[in-house]
Image (tube, rainbow, N blue to C red; front, side, top):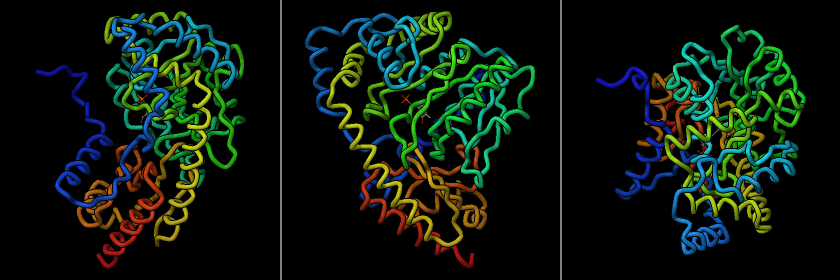
Length: 394
Ligand SMILES: Cc1ncc(COP(=O)(O)O)c(C=O)c1O
């Protein structure tokens, strides 16, 4: 018999959907996939070359559990220069992607029965990891009319003596919502007053639009830094999802435990991949690569938003960051009974794929990732509109 802790476990629906689309593609079906959670750009050659050099130089052995020292030093510099937070390398742990950083933080902090505040819609992995650690998910519903943006005022009502942690993800997957600096400050103060840890998932830091500025809550004050876990990765910023390199920065007491957990589970993030990540941080060519990718995503965001607004009975919030758009298709999903049925209908009849909102705690929506060319966005949204028209009169 399997352990109770895995009884709720589901495979990430985003991965299952990508697999289904790939299967259909392999059969020769022409399908537009908006399901991917990764940039369609390749990892830059200068990063690949650094990894290749590392392999040739014999960087093929175990690394320290917290990561290679050069990378931790470069990360401390990045966090100071770009995020305004002073961390020493001993407060930084390199992990196998941000996903592992999040999981190790939760393993280190959560007790059976602890409550974790999770603004909803949320990224699919958060509730699974919280439950795996025996804690309770407390969903804080976000309102579409308010652009899916969390506020301190909303959070207040959900704090109890058992509240241990808040997950903050700005820019957000799946909505692309960005929390203003002013509001993040209020949220952080509220957490400080109530002794609630902040896990700030900053994976989409590089993808902000309309002149929005990125802000890390740990930069607000010494006291807030003490309760904050700053999580980030190379995955999205440098298009390195398959490399599996991420990190967490936090006070040393916690960093030590997280490094020990790393050591007793995966040992270390892949050694030669860490050299690639180091290059991404120190090579001046990175800036231009990231800028080009961000600019392309902003154009695609504008296009997708414009086209979705033309579809009757569809509401859509303009995302301010990340690379997802989250239209409300409730009018159509209700005709088929659920957003899952709608997503399946769209794949089968419309040859266009997105991820149903219910995977993110928001029934009736569809997450579309615009990590595809503008031409593909046009074609895919034309198919979406036609397939939805096919439901009129049902
Ligand atoms: C909000 C968020 N956090 C973390 C991750 C995982 O990042 P990584 O691939 O570095 O594990 C993702 C990936 O989709 C994400 O959307």
